[in-house]
Length: 495
Image (tube, rainbow, N blue to C red; front, top):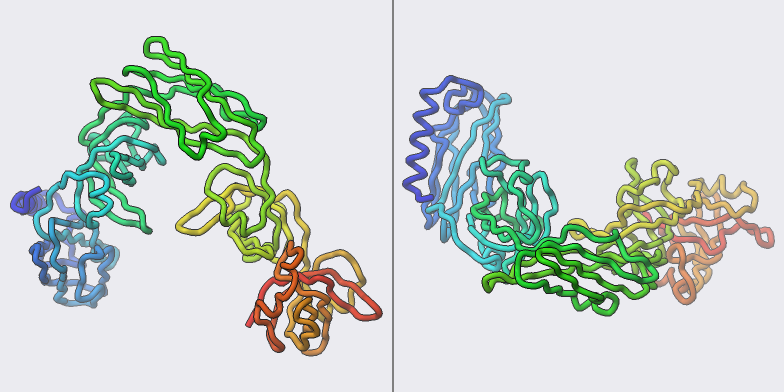
């Protein structure tokens, strides 16, 4: 929209405010907080604009866009000069998010820099372009992640852009399904760009055009192919000339096309999978058809069941996101009330996010648990999700004094003490004490599950020394009259 048109609309808005009935939301009529102007324009070459804030009490400025620098974000009763500064910017940008808050009342401030207009762009140009700029882009819908808000991905061959929110025909939110958009449709959208946690997004876009795909996967003959191998059929509706299938390179060693049958607008494509010796696996296939020299595509996911893979925490952390099932065993720490905890073995640590039965099983810090779940990454953090605890070996936290009075058993105890003597660094034979009582650790391992050479030289590798306070887990054992923990599991260094 041209800048002069914006000011015309603003003038109409101001007139409307003075001629309409008063409510708490009629900003210019608020008694608690007022501004000399609520619409601010900064030139494209950059600069500063000042307004006067008049308030009856303390006030705060929130939701300031990152490209604006205010002279202050808070003030007291009376009149305050508030200055907004922006650096030079090529192209137009705007924000209506800023608000002043005072005594529970809200004053909105709209700010614009340069000439706000829509830029036609490819996905690649959107990805490389500046934030806060409004783009119009055309691409094929490759995935829909939320059907309420309309969160989806589009790809035009130059790149893929995430759409965070799609408005309906009236400009309303949370009505995406009314648009009838499906995966494979070619759509043209307009919206402002933002970058959130490294992800480029077009936010609350307006749909300019929908070009329905001429090919669609109606259903699959099964949810998944058996672990032993077999076939699955995709039932497809196509209004173009023929059907093509693109199997990704990393799936061609286990998935192939067995047959393609087409009659009129209906097609049946049967895929064959080899036996699966590993965990569950899946791949996204692209199906295409041609009409009028243009290719239309859609996607479908083929899944094959598999076994549960027994892995170390390190191997789990290095795995890819997906539906593959992994089984891990380690020590639970940082246990939360919602079933989330950290799982640690000798090789590393990972987060277990909201285990399905951790609360019911009463998992607590120090317990040794075996859990089965899938791999996911959220904001750069690896997580085990959908985790079900299949085995729990409880651990009792106890003082060294109380530990010394126990009988020998295979029960796990977690104790904390300071290292008083290192008898053998290679094997990890050390003494720890609470100041009065001393217990011998006959072997200190780097964590649960350490085997072979991984068991040795931990004291050196960890840099442990006399005076360090450590927490360990192990069972009570008496040997030649000496109370000890054999092959103690290291939990943490506390200083």
